Length: 218
Image (cartoon, rainbow, N blue to C red; front, side, top):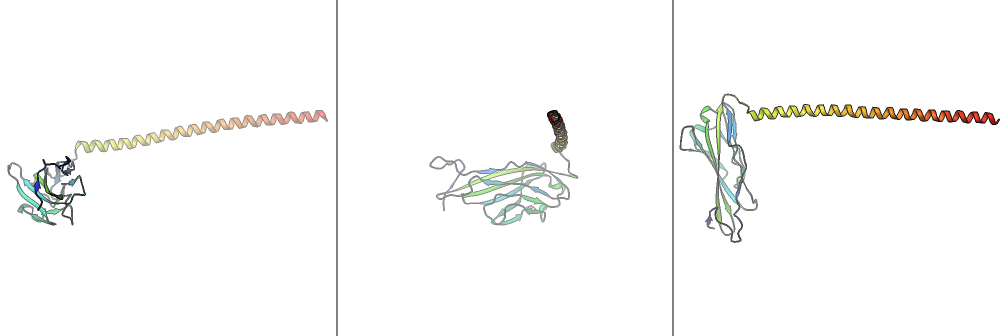
């Protein structure tokens, strides 16, 4: 069995050991009572060619409590609910049919007010190299608040207002451009008509002079 090394160790050639990349998913959430809520927990390898296996462990800390309790674990393609308060209400929503887990998300069914608290997701990944193995632990915390109905944040409201303002602004700009182009084409058409009229009059005058010359010669 290859020896285990810590995250401070390095290759002999000076290169860093393959770390994990944890995506910046918001560490807070607002769930509506009696509805469902997805808790995202994603941790990916920066070097996909390195074979690995991972175990995902979830913990729950209720408000006012200092100690967390085991909530859920997923290992060897099997998930297990460890907290009786969540029996038949947790669904694995992460990676499937693989031991090298990248997504350890959970879905809570029928959210209750008692689900308010702090959730901790820990990725325990075993990276398997030729001469040794390396264990990496990456925790992620989610602060969940349960409300009676969803409340939109100020950022969401402002973004929607800006979207409608942008749409209206673009429509007004298109109208102005259409009017400008119409006037430009109309002016060009009038100028062309005037030039054609002047050319026609010049040709008619020249023809009349030629006819008069022919009559004098006769």
